[in-house]
Length: 462
Image (cartoon, rainbow, N blue to C red; front, side, top):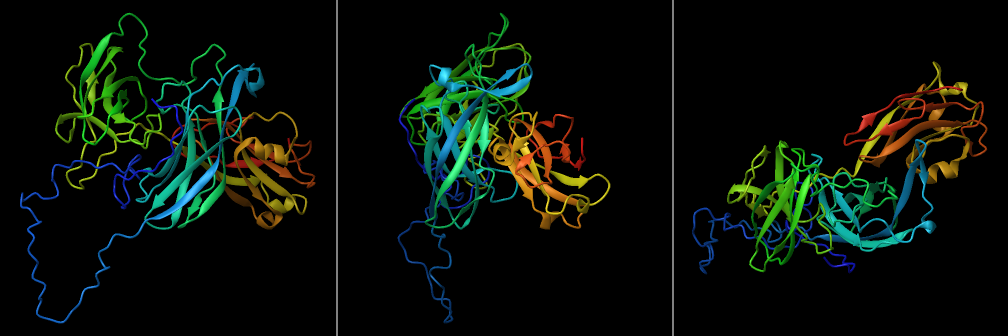
């Protein structure tokens, strides 16, 4: 795989919106087998159609044209914050004491959800190859059919296997990025919290690596790539929700689009799983969720998932990349499941009364912290050590019995969710005598998982 930084945008679905993660801009010509012409007739006869309709009605030649795409540039930085758990508490790692960066490349993606169904249509991607400690610059070109918002996030290849995995650490820019034609957005700063393992190896790690003498089942077969591509391909076993990989094999794809894979250390009795594959179609040195994907097929363009892994080898299980949907003529999305963010939301109340019981002018801050709070802290420090925060001024609080907050935090992450009142307006939170509230238990600990959650908090003075 290349270690050169390549920033590129591609387009699989021409200029129309694509459904499903990984189906946005991917400029690869896909052989659909002429499925758009089921009759078998050649529409290109060279004869002029009869346009005499018998009336003088005219047709606007621009009426059926595809809209012109718009492009914008998103620049920013992404930084991996290494942490260790010491005596049950998360603490930052002093990277000056490390001899090398203990993680792989970083994938940056910008996507939207045009159909409102939770899918991820990638409008631009970038990769930071061989990142350094501290902020790493990135730039990506966003291509869309019209003005709109995108979400920008980054995920680090924690174990360095060139695969962006479901469980690997992610960071998200908590504000929607507004895209207009020609816009240049330059203020995106993403931080990824990743746990450091001093003994080596990534903290998440899936992949090809069974444990025990009995983990020697083989899942293998041919792979067929239906686009112009030569390079590395990836075969994976993932769970039925697309999370993984549980096992994987990186194989060679020849210039004619053929290859073969073999996972040889699969543990028995996995049960129902999915067999999927992908290629590095955006040529950024990573197998990422914006790459062209495919899956096990029982016949051309017929997805055969799930498969059942019991105690016998599974051989001659063909993977087709991509699978073409016979209805839309577009590639199916069979990429690995990535949850860039979830939303934490709820109501903040004060004891049993209204916020008028606070000192006039008070402010309330709701913060999703990266580290467990133990003492008073400056507002600026709390904000810089948070995934996201929301501030309520006195004009938001006066006369109200509740306010509603909503924060965007990384999926599959750990955070400490707190609400603080700054009643003396000195810019310091969690002072003696000032009201606070925490989600869940007394520490405010929240494991975000893959779905949004609601946490109502009642503020009081400890």
